[in-house]
Length: 210
Image (cartoon, rainbow, N blue to C red; front, side, top):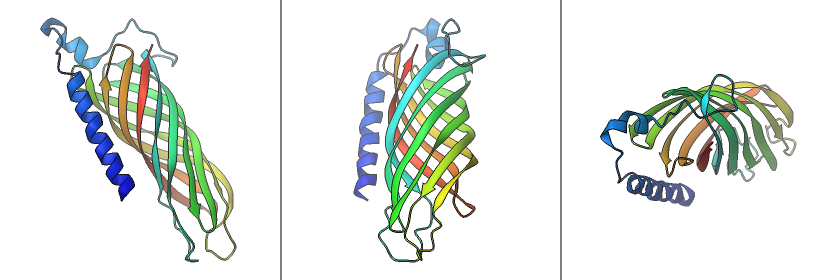
């Protein structure tokens, strides 16, 4: 509960800073361009896109997996992070490719971990100049490892496979090159024992637009 309250407080402070950063509006004749933040003259590392960027997010994950039947300590949350590169097809649609690590969760007397690579389509909706919301829909190739004690009802081992992913977020531009991002994601992983479960995360991060 304290962790959730801390994230809520941090999000409030972050949003307050975002509002303050947008207090100076863009000239009216450049309003459409400034709201979308799209500039076709900027290059990208991803094919068929412009306005390239790289990003880093850190936060907390939550494993939606069973803790077994042993009554052992079960802490299904952990530190999480992801790095990614992205680009835009137009002012409202883009794509991202990245790596994510959901951290290690205490489970069944051992640890459970999940990581993977993700490819997503990103839809953007500018609200004001430099401030926008976005949604993601894609797929993650994940690798998982479960270590636990025998007789806990949790299958140990390694597994890998594809699963769907989606997310929502807020973005604010601090300058022409830097943006702050508040993001929520959910990824579905293949765990040992033919067990498919989701791991969700909430993160704060930065994007650099080149």
